[in-house]
Structure formats: C-alpha cells, structure tokens
Image (tube, rainbow over all chains, first blue to last red; front, side, top):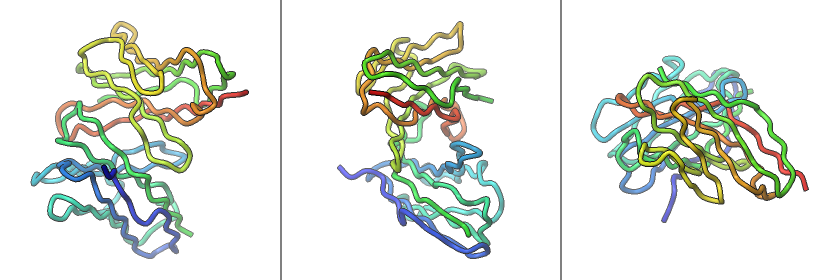
Length: 115
Length: 114
C-alpha cells in the first residue's frame, strides 16, 4: 500500500518568504507527526496531531511555525518569514493510533533551503 | 525527560565483520526503544523496536538489539555486514504519556568497506 508522501521534495526560497509543506499520511492512520532534521540539531520533534484532540505544539521553535491537519488526514506545515536557520529536511510521520509503542512510518521528507 | 546517546557518530567496518552500534538511554519510566535506518535521500525505516515483551529483539535485514536495563543500553548488532548496510542509524526512545513523540539520538553513520 501507499506510504507517507510529502511534497514538494525540494523547496528553495528566499529569506523572508512564506513556505508551505504538505504531508499525506497513510490511510487510516489517526496520528501524524512533523520532525525536522538538520546538521546541527539532529532529528527534532515539531508537532503532533491525534484525531480530534488539540495538537501538541511543544516542539515548534517559534511562532513563525504553524501546522494544521484538515479532515483528520492531510497536514500542512507553514513557515512564515523564513530564516536561513530554517534550512533543514522536514519529515512527516504517521502511526495507526499514536500510542507510545506504535511504529511511526516516515515520509521521504522535504528539503528546504532558505537563501 | 527522556534522552538518547549514540556513541560514535561514524563507524566503519569491513564487509562480513560484526556490526555494533551503541545506544544508551535515559528515562524515568520504562521506555519503548526503536532503531531506525536512513538511506541517502530517503526517510526513516524501522529496523526493530523494544516493547518490553522480550529483551532480545530481532528486526529486519538480520539486525537485532538487546535491551539491558542495568546498563540502560539498547545496542544494535548484526553478525556479518553487507555493503547494502551502509546508511545512517538512529536510536530513539518513546515518551510515554503526552504525545508519544520520538526522541532521537544524533545518529551513527555506518560505512562498510569491501
């Protein structure tokens, strides 16, 4: 079956511009996660959605970052007024029910470069 | 708070040699532990996970890991390395309660020499 998909695969933008990154989770998975992978910081949790519950936004690095999940499926991560330190690979993952023991399935990522 | 330490950011082995990638965790409650592999320009793929059912966990591609509570370790091993094992490996701990997010180690890049 289809895995987690992300688009675009690569995004180059200029400092100060807004960007939107999209994630399509595995069908039927109720939990969705965003992580950021950068050379200096490794893999960091950003935000978590589980069903209709309020999202856990504890990993978002600043108020320039936001995310939404529409209809319990597709999610969009938005970065406003991008900065060079936002350059990283943004990974999306989904799991069946969001439990601590659940396997998270990762997408291929979106590589964001801020010039 | 949970944390993971991976000793050695780079490990190099010869084809056919033992692979040993080290992971130590810190957790105030019994953890769930995961090993993921990342091939170049790809996402992460689960190799295996510890869920407290058995301390020796077998995963895909011949990898296994042993949970040792007394040493707070979850080292990844494979008896005989293949060229195709060259990748980056991440150990992660799951945070019980709350969002069950994964907390990752910094990763270990494995090189396999012919």
